[in-house]
Image (cartoon, rainbow over all chains, first blue to last red):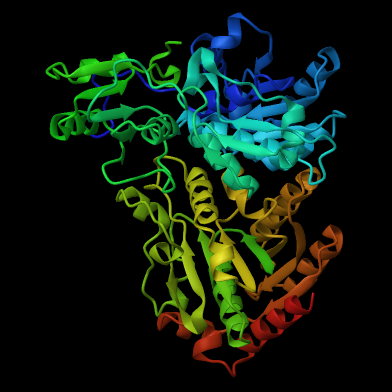
Length: 311
Length: 248
């Protein structure tokens, strides 16, 4: 059955990606849900939760909120929270509930900004896309709200899209000041699919590579290799001399894609690539190995937090 | 770009008015898009020779992922680009969500950027019953609301609800009520009743459409009166309204 997962658990969804981008920005983050999506973000999709503080809240929607569309009540609750929490802006993140009842984020921004003196940044996620899409939407919303055309500070290199969901403990946080001055960066590096989307949205020149793998091919990779991870991880290894095809459950941009690369959606597509590809090595999260128990080649564990929750 | 949403009680003639307005704009050389936002998906039928258009939700239901506006639209009389959102089987699912999904798709396809219309008309189901049916008047979509009414009590009741809903959205940056279109049913005291309503709601009557057999006969042939009886009084009223709306 198309879409049925027999082995893998669901990957991190878009609201987790959005929250991950915003986590280090000093925002009051409000996930517009009944509580479960926020629980998922804090309990499973955010490795920094136990090591650093961030104000992540659930809107705590209930049945009558959904039936009546009580945006005004939500705006008032957020207004009260802002009075008690030192924060530079409010971010509201969508989930399946507001997507289904048709919450208007532009209107919600206006309502909340009528009650607080700080900017409100809505991120249009719906819980039905994967984390990279939520990261993209968060970057776009932040750029729209904060990125100035005349940066006061000239920044050196900025790496975009190096979030924990892609890179686990090797993440690089961006600050709000980084976003404000992003148009003044001397060099932009897209380190993941969402990084490419963000850089394309900015319309500035950028390079595509993963700082983790640029000068460091993981030990054990040899021969013809299938890299199953974020597309930029695969590209970086290819650029470093690895003879590889890229498979990714996430986005595969035309600027990265080469013959043999594939955007995959189903478990079966990964199984077919391994079966038919004649690969000497598979470089992918070890949790994918269960899909191909008969594969006898070399396996290099490339952890992906969004896939397995392993850092 | 002129972007107008047309609301009114069910059965009051919204689709007739919208299609005739589209035809009137098109006959003035304007590029027009008409988006039917009703699960019945019959808004544009009289621009298309009486042939129904496959609605967007039906296309999505078939598992097709459209990559261009051409896949979900069809050109009708005067080149009017016709789109129907459609919706679920009556009694199932969520029609409002269907409208939102369609609008999201139109955004993703860059419909306005690609087609560059002069006029966009949204023909919206009956009343603003939920968030989905308010989507056409959100920021970025329609900027003006026209309410179709007759002098009948329930039509004016619905018009009042729509005025109220639009007023409720004032702090959200939504569309404003541009005025009323009196689609006459020839009930006693109709003109006076609608004028009283208009004065009470500070919403001018922007057009009076006479009850006309020409409209019925043209619709029987799958046409608007602007197409099928362009010299009729009804057609002239639609042309006058289109001209007035273009002039602001």
